[in-house]
Length: 266
Image (cartoon, rainbow, N blue to C red; front, top):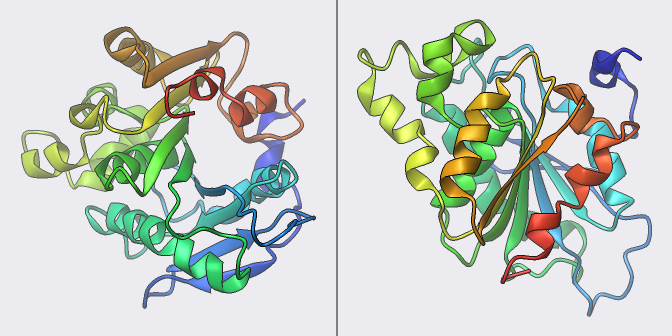
């Protein structure tokens, strides 16, 4: 099976598209569960951040199969777009867009499905690859009442490690405008490691056969931060794209990470 097939697989379109800002990429796809239930029982809101090494060539469309699958698991899914490198993105615009989308999503979705989204309840964040970095960055910077759990799938979680190894054809250097000694302030601001362990429950999931994002980077984080609010899970024999493929075995682990379920905050 071609593991990249999920990137171009047709998927159901979103139920709605809402706008969180005034630029062309300030859009959020909204996926709603087939049965919303009673308005007095608000559903869990999940913000899903796509990857693609922060580059313009990859947009949110490639994770629509995952968003569609997640809504069938009962989530209200918000899939934001953001400005990317090669377009109008870069640092800090790319990260600030995701942060703005996270802040705006509850109110925007409450307008789409009145009574089904509690705008005061904490939400969940998930992200894949570079989107995992952005989900961690935005989620750990928010106030505790906004985000209480983050699932990062093969995230580029350590920008210094990624820069040193030239990961993704020097994707970090492209995002941050150069090497660490050339843009020290950008690297400091973009650094997720300095935000850990943080107020939110963090689950990092990575495949042992990932050829795009080095699993060793996140193994080190798991060894350093393993505890009640941080969990690292390595999936044997799993590559990079299986983590966002609803047809792959890794999907069950990605959707229902055991360490998040057992955390004190649930």
